[in-house]
Amino acid sequence: MSVGKRMTVVTGGAGFIGSRLVAALNERGEDDVVIVDRLGTGSKWRNLRGLRFAELVDVDVFRERVRTGGIPAGSTVFHLGAPGTETRDADRLVDGIYRYSKELAEACLKSGARMLHASSAATYGHGEFGFFDNENTTERLRPETPYAFAKHLFDLWSLESGFLETNVTLKLFTVYGPGEAHKGPLCSHVRRLLREIRLEGRATLPRSAQPDCQDGAQARDFVHVDDVVSMFLHFYQHPERHGLYNCGTGR
Image (cartoon, rainbow, N blue to C red; front, top):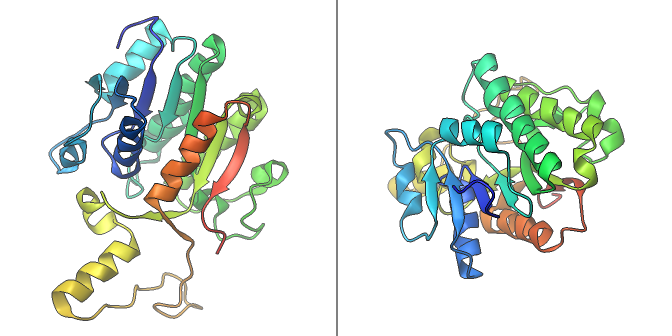
């Protein structure tokens, strides 16, 4: 990652959505992509097979480079990387989501680079105030998990700092599609149900965490990963557009 050289960065680029985004950039003829991720001991590395990229950088190394060298002007950062939703260590989540995102955002604002950021529909909590991407109601939301809380902290900061006046945040609903295998039990309900049907010829209704909702009666907005990638590419191609948006089907 050369300091001062315009670049396209995809954090979480070996993950489910990130790897599909890199593939889409490759299809557009863009190979000079910096992927930021931590592969660990799982199978996430498999998502990188067949992709073309300039460099694969560890998360901590990248954060240090940003602190010391910033983000070059003219660059684009697709910020999808974050600790998993299963993480219960709130300190780790606040650092790996809120502080990390804030560091990147401040570096982009300083140099004039552009950042396209992935938030989560989990920030809406139980939906007491609806599921509308109205920036005026963001501060009223009450997320129910540490992961959603950390995402919400950055959403609040992005509104207060003026980040959204030139950049974009997409609140992703339940994403499904190819590339989820490495997530194991944390993959989408769509993949889980399909796997059960293929292996056992039947599917088990997902258990409900709410006493007033029967198993299998839960409702979610499922959006295909390629539609999510299309949304990111839309804003990538239209730098004049900015703000906070839901990314789902609306159903």
